[in-house]
Image 1 (cartoon, rainbow, N blue to C red):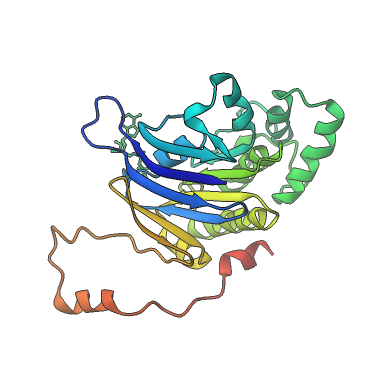
Image 2: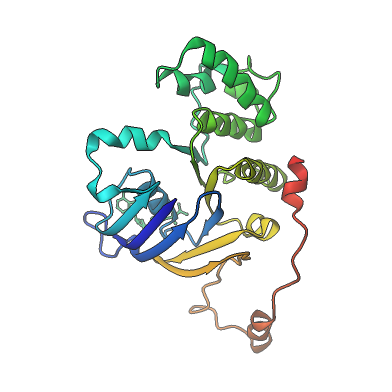
Length: 261
Ligand SMILES: Nc1ncnc2c1ncn2[C@@H]1O[C@H](COP(=O)(O)OP(=O)(O)OP(=O)(O)O)[C@@H](O)[C@H]1O
């Protein structure tokens, strides 16, 4: 569904690559966390998947299309197959919940009948039944993110990209939102979520792709994540180093998924 072959990205006037020779293969229906410290290249990777940026070298293939050969006029069609969710929700403040979600269908010229059918279904899916008439400022952060997720899904994308979707939420709400993304994934949508929240990654036990300075340093099927300490500056105590060598804890149940039911 998403394939990167030797992909590098160097932004103009930048000394080092934001992505450096990245190889990645994400199959249809997978749920993948992209983790790494601030500046490691997570957002850049997502921007390449939606063709907001082009690779400097290498090949990006999304849903079978080679982005290096995609004519510009085809870009909107490809983007339609990809939903996006961000840390800051990006809702239209003057529009109701229903209008925010409906807007994504209106811009694609969907009929009023389709919109009236699909929008309530989407609000129910994300747990916002009965909240359609509220304005964004009348919602909690978690509820606002649910609106953004409904909006991202309303046109039936094959892929959902979430860039730090829990960055503005408390830990319990973060887990609920991630569980909702997992629920959506179970319906068949490929989900790629960038985060540096190790609690969420460890609770969900999904595939983890870790970036460091633009390179993939780990790609693990049921990975955990530990926010890296800068060990170059702080020499570890010997017993601390030993702890890091110990085997992983046995897998926990998936509390995040239980929350969403
Ligand atoms: N538009 C841009 N122009 C120039 N450099 C950029 C641009 N966007 C990102 N970068 C640089 O590319 C590198 C990767 O940034 P990116 O935003 O992809 O990282 P990230 O892992 O998503 O970070 P964060 O977790 O802070 O969002 C950083 O060194 C950053 O400064």
